[in-house]
Length: 380
Image (tube, rainbow, N blue to C red; front, side):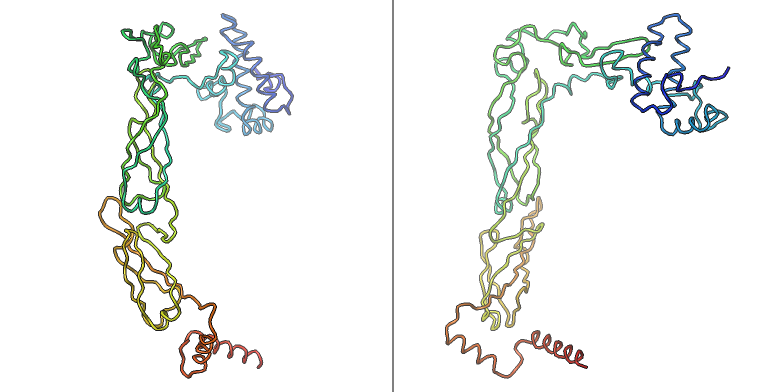
């Protein structure tokens, strides 16, 4: 017996859009569903034809093959698709489109088991805490204030009046889930009476209205270890929101941010500091005192002829290394300062220096020597 044209089966034109296909399929599937036509063999056969047609036409590749070759595209192994056979269309995929029409809800919750412990756990909380670079170096004990949901003292988190206990939910018989069946479809959802907990409160606590928790401000001590970095997360277990009706509490996460320092720049475990020095100190040499992150000071010897940007390394004077007891290094970067607001005498001395013999600026002499050679080559 020749197969019916798929477009005719669904009652749509060959150029029908996906939305038009879906709309036609839903209408016909509802009309010819076996559960709505018990014992009607014609309706059952029509239902299978509708699903077979829709399963091909909703797939762009299968539809293109069908438009070109007709039913022959799926025979003799063509495309590996055999409508109506053991490897036929995916019923769960096709039927998902009419779950909402059959039950008034999505079928996405099928097969999930209830888990009242997870459902009643309190939410995790986040607290952003800013600290200075010195505090990150030393570590510190900080006290934070957090307003959150805490267990109700009146009912000790149970949600019921004193002397009462939660009872099994009569709607779901304690499972926390409700199932709706329609033929071979089964849809499961959270029980609306107990919100998935499996138990209800007959005599709710007058303080917390049966939730088992109230809003409170808590003061918590946070231990910040030495050597923490930007974005470090500290977890305080059980200090988040209290769980519903005695459920476990969530956690509190402290996220650290380190404020910029006016003198130091941090690079991992190392500290960098730019130090301006006088031109005379750079030229003749000398010594300077530089600050360190541990509130100390270190004497640094500046050798004669030090250039701008020269780097000095101070071992063990950097940041604390987390949980190790060691420290990184500190790097001093020189910034040779050009004199400003010179007196006449000072200008005369610099001009006198410029007239003297000897090369005291080798880099400048070398550069301008190359420039002269470059210009000379251009003239040739």
